[in-house]
Length: 260
Ligand SMILES: [Fe+2]
Image (cartoon, rainbow, N blue to C red; front, top):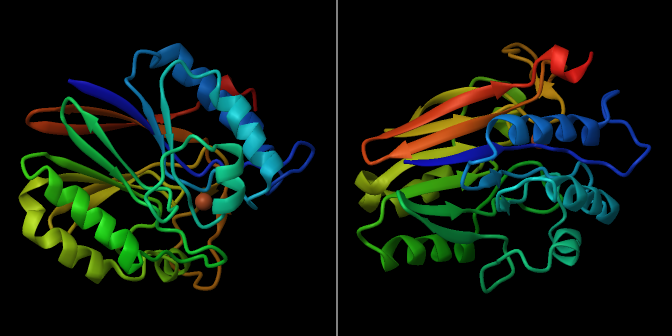
């Protein structure tokens, strides 16, 4: 069995700055403490983007410091709040595709992870351009027997939250056409962006998403022009994969642990 962790939406800011009244670094530190205490034997951790809130190089430096405490490898992805250039300057060793997009394929005992870069810098919604889709197609086809787990910051589907739906991955239909011949091999989508614990399926593909380690988004089906921020506890996913199952547990950092 393979056990790994799914973190997302850290929204780190430079020291001394607050975001929605919170200090994102403190929120992340508490999640890291929780991981060290409960899940230090996990094989690796994937962070599905919005590593920082404004793409500030200083905030990426904060990220590097926070994650250095984790005992397992950490695979980083970008979200709409990130800056690809600043990220790559602070993390020059993170793999990219040949065009500089922060995409990588990772082999595991239970299948292949494909980490996609859905960010269109300066835009809140997500896109996968032809070059990124060609990379995905090549990775899928080069190992035709591998089971596949896809990781995207932006979900390609609507979830009923109007603002978040308007800034989803906008060319999900084209993504699906790339995936369609290989659906039997696609085990799961892991998404960020939503700042909520969520699970379901899209065109038959199971998916899950986790809370941010920073602020959360309310289950508000009425407000259309903004995503309503909530201050529910941060959390992350604990994923256990075996030959016949993909199980996702949602860890919440309790208020007593957070001291609030
Ligand atoms: Fe976010």
